[in-house]
Length: 145
Image (tube, rainbow, N blue to C red; front, side, top):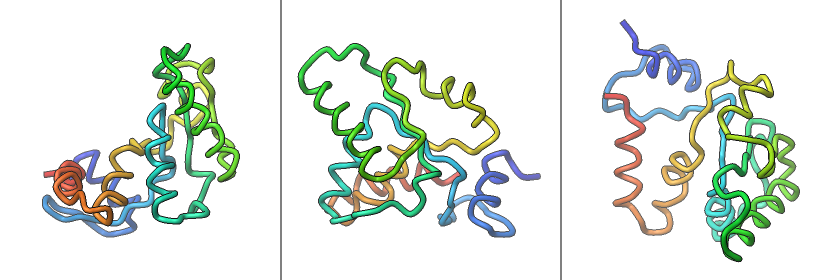
């Protein structure tokens, strides 16, 4: 009997089955990012990425710090807004939209697989930058066994 995590991964990876300890390349319907989007932007800049595979699969909701407490938070939010504009992300919800996961449900996206971009970002981008201990821990957490 498959767990819900296994069912989601099988569908997103386009494979017949998955098992504990196996890492799969999964392509979720929707990837949600939040206030920490700026971290992904910095990594993408370092890698020289100039486009996203499919901007329609990305939603950004700035919900953690509103109003901003410091100039740094304000700058991070500006970075996230500019990233959404520059990369064609239409599913962008600013600080007044509400709580991230609730916003997505209210917008009719609750039937899609929602993954935390922060975890995927670490798994995809951190190892090339020499942070393999973080990547290994994240990859272990992406496993479902």
